[in-house]
Image (cartoon, rainbow, N blue to C red; front, side, top):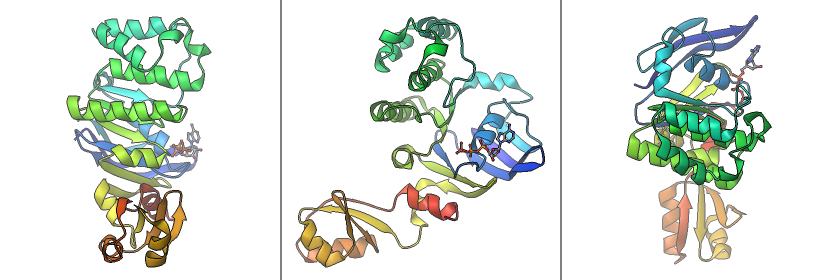
Length: 285
Ligand SMILES: Nc1ncnc2c1ncn2[C@@H]1O[C@H](COP(=O)(O)OP(=O)(O)OP(=O)(O)O)[C@@H](O)[C@H]1O
């Protein structure tokens, strides 16, 4: 396992924020960490990153507690929404220094151009907009070639094209280099395209943990989104409502496909209930 957490507890003053959190993250997985605002995601991630001390419980990252064994952090990169320590270094100095430390100079130049940072190299880190700072952190994490990347809302400040780029890189690193990811994000529509596993946290407790498919199949009567060659007729056959190019309808996938087939309506694309529905279920919304 890349991460093992057992009965993790944390209080701030008298406020219990983590109330006995238990979950694991498989090596080689891309695990989404999902929950409403204030559920305890950032607190958990800070403890996993050795930045915050737990009160009680067991926390293991590659078998070691990151608070007691900071050396384990050499195998890990952590990405937060904002740079934690604004620095006087320029973007170029910072990234090239990292490249030298990790012996990865070629990758540095490739990533700088991939993330379109070439024109930003002379800016100081503290001068960066939050979107740019996030891109620099991503590149820094990728230079380190960590075995595990823990990311707290890594795409929150990125525009859609860089968000897509980020998730493409996540998929590539996961498949080719076997990098494990533990990613919290509120942009579920993007997360659901890449994650293999999911951990839902709600009010300091884990409400679901398991494979992505199982999380989606447990949402009760499914919401199906179907795009067809004749929406008007399909609406008459299926009921449901039009949402953009899709018809959204509740029911069983097999029955919906059969009904459309019987009426000679061609299916262009069909998808099942999204992570949003699972989020609502596991957050008691
Ligand atoms: N240093 C702190 N001192 C006191 N309370 C804190 C501290 N850090 C976090 N909290 C509280 O702990 C709770 C959990 O916060 P946390 O940031 O872990 O949630 P989150 O799930 O990451 O939320 P979000 O999705 O909004 O980022 C919140 O109510 C927050 O106000």
